Length: 450
Image 1: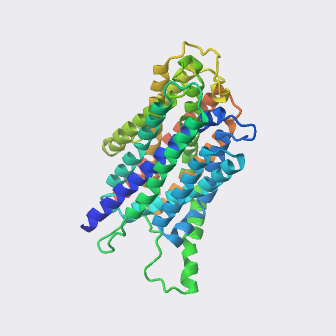
Image 2 (image 1 turned 90 degrees about the horizontal axis):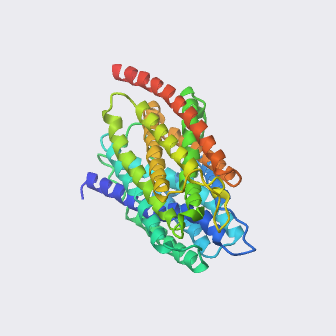
Image 3 (image 1 turned 180 degrees about the vertical axis):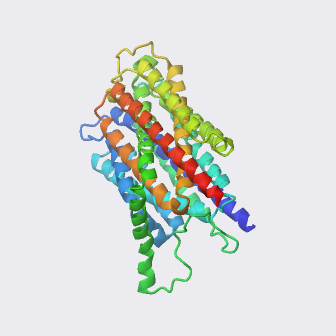
């Protein structure tokens, strides 16, 4: 196999590995609050929202140590062991205990930081300036297909179920655990790229140990240097004018990530007025979100290269799309749906609840999310082209912190208050993005001049 063919093979394997892992994990996150409400045990006192808040909170803090872990054991083993921790978290639902549930949440938060740092490293060392866009698109598309398969399985398994029995729960989570483990072992199919003719894109640095290491104590201790320098660069980058402006937009993506990946599915499952299929509709909702994500990622990823109007129209479209979704959700879903007990809510919404409106909102949530994320990734790559790794670490740090905050308040706030927070933050985030885009356009003109 040619060097370029080997690199493409690695990207495809990477994408399939993440597709299997997140088929399991994203499906788990989508249904876990509904499953916990159905769990009949006086000894279990966990909350799916609290668990996800812990995961994202630990994830944000662990971004500072993840580069050192990847530097010491390499990206392949980093992804494998991180994937095992993801699988353990999913397996906890087979026999639920409060202590194991929250312990696994902490471990997955650490694993997530290591996993995504290693993923970025593999993508960088298998790409050049001319292939980074193609490779990122291949990886994104393969990973987003995870939203289809797991949620389709949930729909088929829970179709017509009013109550999720222990057998239903165990069957689903045993299957999801096996799927996640398949993704872990796929990482061993990634091959070491040939050193000759390989060039990572500008601004990307490999976290792999140098071949020139002499094996001495000094050489071994130098493996920790990437993590320390990475943290220093990330802290300096966080206080730059551009990143402070973008932090509002990034923070909004963290809040809406929480809403579409956990809260909204729970709301749909709690709507008894949707009939006996309310629980299985969580799966269809996840599929609709995935369709929106993939469609938006493909269209707006290409549009970003071809449009002369910049990124602002795409972000504006994303804001409008989300506002339409929020308004329809406000009308269609009862206000206590996020906090309703296992039996669901019988409260009236402002209109007669419609399954089709609910699923259309799922699609809009995914489409709007892809609008914001594709443009944020693009503008960060432009503004911080020489220090892209710490810039994207700051992106993940802010996003995960806000996701943790959102999962925490989801335990207490009614739906209309959560939607109000999203509306306000969406407006502020869009305005801050528009200002940053003007800075980016000026930077591009200066860059092209030289």
